[in-house]
Image (tube, rainbow, N blue to C red):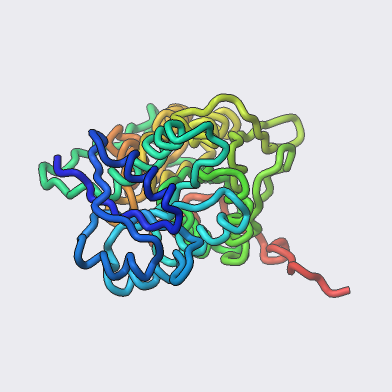
Amino acid sequence: MKPVRVLAVDDSAVTRRLLTLALTDDTGSTVCGTAPNGQVALAKVGQLRPDVVVLDLDMPVLDGLATLAGLRRTHPRLPVIMFSALTERGAAATLDALAGGANDYVTKPAGLGGADEAVAYIRRELLPKITALGAPCVIGPAAVVAPPVQPPAAMPPLPADVVAIGVSTGGPNALAALVAGLPADLNVPVVVVQHMPAMFTRLLAERLDGMTPLRVREAAAGAVLEPGGVWLAPGDHHLVVLRDADAVRLGTHQEPPVNRCRPAVDVLFDSVAAAYGPRALGIVLTGMGRDGLAGSRRMRAAGAQILVQDETSSVVWGMPRAVAEAGLADRVLPLDGMAAEIARRAARPRPASVSRPPAHPAA
């Protein structure tokens, strides 16, 4: 397969060297050029014709956000992966970049022992994303999507009492579009696993909260699931739902990663299957890999419903494809049709009197 050509843009000569070492070898990628700032990068893109741009955020002359805006004007389809520091400022800027059209991000290695560890980290964390976003399309037979697994009894599905969402690459923008389309009177709680590190998930929850009449929060252990609430798994913690005598509550833990992920979709979906059985609705959105496949299988075995995002509207059709091709999806939908389908399959609307209260009630 033809190597993926990468333009590495970073003001640090050390980082540019590490990227070159990590991506030039037998990795299937090659650094076709480097740039110390966005101005140089924009001048080089037309000449080098990279398949993917790896872009730093904090640079002199022209920073990452301004460079991204320039790339989106001249090369709207060129995949861009942000390479950002794991700081609050870096997390906020990364979310800005994703909203501005970046395809994905990787946090820079920190606290590692030396160049060899940094190169290994880049190959482990960045290389798969470069491959997924930058590999040339190979036209071949269309994927065969198996029909959904039907429950033993030919009965209509029960209305969902909970919505569980799993998402990864392309997730922040997909979640923004989805929550903005959910009705204000949605009568079920929503729990979400987005593959993201700590700090990013809190900032993402705050941003999503401003896009919907529903209440979006980062999940906290012990919180009671209530209609109209949306809870996002905290970075580096698995999220589960637990039913006790009085209510269904959230739990978090730091048991080992599943599918190399923490939080993992499979962990959440397993707990949803146990707590809600057939009164659950699972959603698998854009993302690399197969996280959510095993959990979807367990949810379907419990009688739950599963919806997945279609290929055309996905940034990477990995996670939803795995579920669809296993025959576990009740429907494969474009992103812009997902919110309406969730509302249709959820329980009946709440009375308007119990909708979300204003953020600052009058004294």
